[in-house]
Image 1 (cartoon, one colour):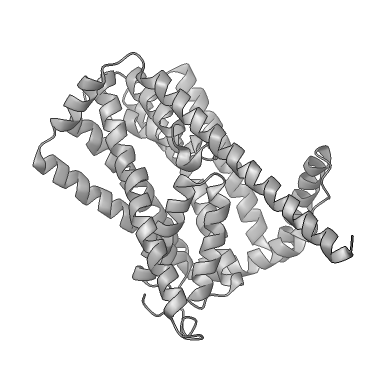
Image 2 (image 1 turned 45 degrees about the horizontal axis):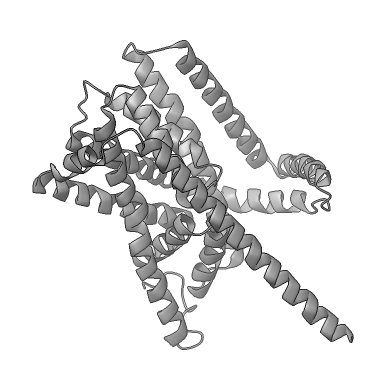
Length: 363
């Protein structure tokens, strides 16, 4: 067998293994989702759930639709701040297309990041600018996910509903948030400090990789220095709009859940707004590890369990969570597929060189 034939055979085997691995992930994810929903819905009447949903008035449905659309729009605002020159239309196309992939495909987060590079690259953004945008938006999103549970638990405590478990959770959240901010601040403090952070992180990663017999990482100190310099330039004048749009995006998502609960009949006397915020915040933390695409099943389990434990009627809570997920998981998928098809059509039909003429151009 020639070298070329051997290489082709190796590539074919790798592709088959990759397909088999992806198929296994899909089957496992679907099985997990089915098990979670069976457990959540096994002891309630679906007729009661449907009755709670259909009892909503047209005014309530219209209000929910408006809030859901606003929630989608806020994603674009975040990206417009971390990628200066990216206009609203293109930001919407990119965020919705990548969200659709993340919500439906196993390992969708990694594929979504790849799509972000492809889409921004087709509009004239360099890989360096895209990398900074991806990292900064990711870091700010992580800060928000850590900060919101702490804030929510503090608000619950102020309302007189503190418990040892909640105080412990708040303390752990505060510790994690402080640690993340300190590491980030040290990395931005100077090039030397950024290099040290990169070296330390590289050593830790290499030791972990050695446990699974993978080669050590290289060049992390160079990458962290570059990241530090470019991030400082971006944050020097953009830290406030980046922070503000990130907070608005998270709060808007929370408001969709809160309005869903109130519209199906879960009153503030049953589950207060601060308790809803606390459950919402921990559901967001649960998606930090992508067990299923878009947290399908996992988010529902955390929300339903937490809200029922807080005092909500289970059929009404289930109804609210299903509507919430339809608006924040299903709707972005539908919109995102349309955005992805539009981008593909534009990419294929646009004359060479025109797509990258200027990053500031609209879609």
